Image (cartoon, rainbow, N blue to C red):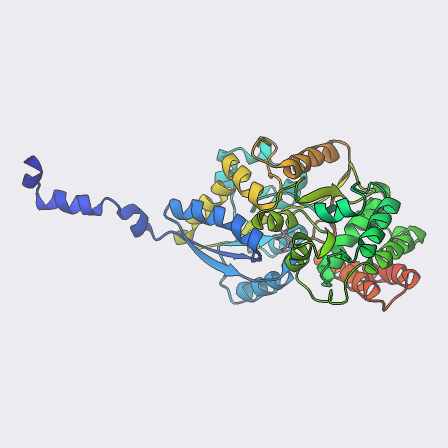
Length: 417
Ligand code: GAL
C-alpha cells in the first residue's frame, strides 16, 4: 500500500523519469546520397542506432550516385551559414572543406576511443586534417569489382573471366545468348568508375603514374590510348537505353537476368542483397579481370561541421557510434563495403565481403592499394571532373581513343592549374 503514500514530488519525479531523452532534444541533421534500396537499408542501421539513444535523425537525402549533387547542395548550406551536423563525403572533398575552416573537431571521441590505432593510414590521410580528426570513416568501398549474374555466366560457359581476353569472350557469349552483356548507366561518374578498373587492369604502376601522380606522359601516352580502346570495346556491350540510367537500375538489370554483369563498386552488392540474392548462388563477385591483388578504394566518411554547443553532444555521439566495431560490422554487411577499422572480425560477412576484407589487407600491405579517381580519392575535384568530362565524351563516341588520351593529359594539366 506504500505506493499510495508517495508525495506529489515523488510522483512528479516518476513521470519525469523518461525525460532525459525527450528533454535533451538531441538531434543530428545528416546530408547524404544514400537513396537506393541497398544504401537506404544500410543507413537505417545508423539511424536506428542513434534513435535508440534518443537522438533524432533529420534526414537530408540528395539523390545522385557518387555524390556530385550532394556536394552542390552542401555548398549552398555552408554559404548560407547553416551547415548540416554531418555530411557524407569523400576524400579530397573533405580536405577542401577542412581548408575552408568550416569543419568540426572529433578529437574528444577519437582520442578516447583510440581511432589512431585502428583506422588504416590511407583513411586517416583524409579523416584527419592538421592532426585533428574531422570525419568519421564509415566503410571502405572499392571500385574494381564486377557483379555477374550466375545464371548468365552459366549460360556463357560458367567460368568467371580472369583476363581481359576472357572477359571479352564471356561478354561475346552473353551477347550471343540474347541478353545485354553489360548493365551500365551512362552518367559521368559511372563511366569513370569503370575507367578506374580499366586503367588498373593495365598495371598498378600505370594506375599510380596516371591517376595518382598525374604524370602527363602516362595520361597522354600509348597505354592510355589502350585504356580508351578497352572502354570503347566495353561500350559495344551496353544497351541502347544506357544513357543517364541510375547505377542501381543497372544493378537491377543484372538481378533480373536482363543483363549479364555490371562493373561497379561494391555498393552494388547492397542492391543484390536487398533483392534477396545470394553470392555464389544468384550472383558472382570478381575483381575486374587483370586487377586481382590490387584495390582502388573509396571510403564514405561523415564529415562533421562546426555546430553550436546544443548540437555538439549528438554530433560526437554519432561519430562514436560510427566507429563502434559492432556497428562497423552490421552496417557494412548490408552496405556491401568492408569495415573502416582493421580490428573488426569478418565472421558476419558473406563470401564477397570476406574477399573484400582480405583483398584490402593484402593490397595495403603489398603496396597495391590506390585511391579511386572516380570517387575522389586520387585527386581533387577539379582534376576528377576534368577526367569525367573526357572519359564520358569518349564513351559517347565524341572522341576517338588517341584524341581522348591527348585531351585527358591537357585537361588534367589545366585543372591542376
Ligand atoms: C559512392 C559512395 C558509395 C555509393 C555510391 C553510389 O561514391 O561511396 O557509398 O553509395 O557512391 O551512390
